[in-house]
Length: 405
Ligand code: NIG
Ligand code: FE
Image: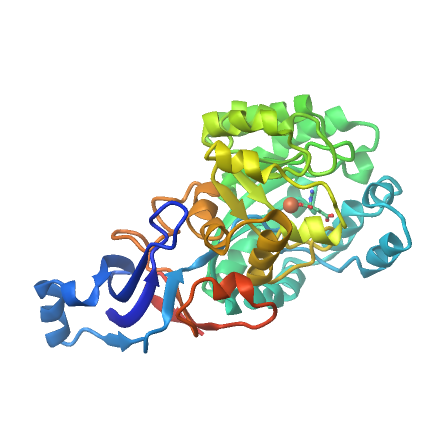
């Protein structure tokens, strides 16, 4: 297939869109076979066209790589609107968690749901993201907190991929919170995570990476190190929720162990940014959670830039801290709250998001050999994606060379 008369934002150049004004892309076997200016389409592709290959005219529209939402908890049951009301009356997110609400509330609802319930409740959220150009999503477990229910969540994520025609990366987040039956026995729970839950989910082929939560309301750096060592034994990449509500040193530890990404980072001190740079760890910023928790402490964006740490952004879609199903709004918030440029925000949901998942050789830019995951937009200006609030210019998406409804 040849897609032509398009403005391409290839996202191959650092800090810029890598624009090709009158561009064309040829696709073969689900991958990008060739990309460049229309006048330079090679002879062999023109021959294929003469032999009946499909041609698609974009009418000058913008094409970007498919968007990647690299940090979500989109599979869950119920919601926490009542908790939102409490927080607006002045009760803090941590206080709600300590009183048995928060993550624990979603754990009860998720345990009570069947796998089919989970799929049915999560599908509208997933479709909403896809309608705005998302072609790859990372989905975490972490609301099951026992072997059976963590596997149920990850199985639902797998089924959603199939159902919706989207690429899904599954992350095991058994060390998200201490489940009620292990209250006061954190150490025993961490042993269960390492010795039983993670190996079982891995054996069921449901784990692409391992995540954890270092925080006062969750686990200590030492406990999570144990989880990461168990992940390493299985050859699995690691990532971490770190420095979201306080500075505990999780990001530094995770970078030291070669983490793919460290996520949230509002409380990361600028002097620890060099650790991320050294390890090639991606900083995943989550403006939806920053906004929804009314956080005022900003992540160290200036230091991240100075140290050339790749910045990704994601919705963090979850019922407690970020009930957000718009990656375009998230890009806008990254610009307004965190001072990213529109070009940085697009890179943060394409190539840098791919890096956060360890998939930078497969997706995230319009380059020969990568999967043909792309979005056609009803605009010719890539800055429009981060600029508009609530307007969805997505015209059509393609995943692996196939148009999706
Ligand atoms: O990314 N930080 C920990 N986990 C989620 C929130 C989970 C919840 O509140 O349900 C987050 O913000
Ligand atoms: Fe999260």
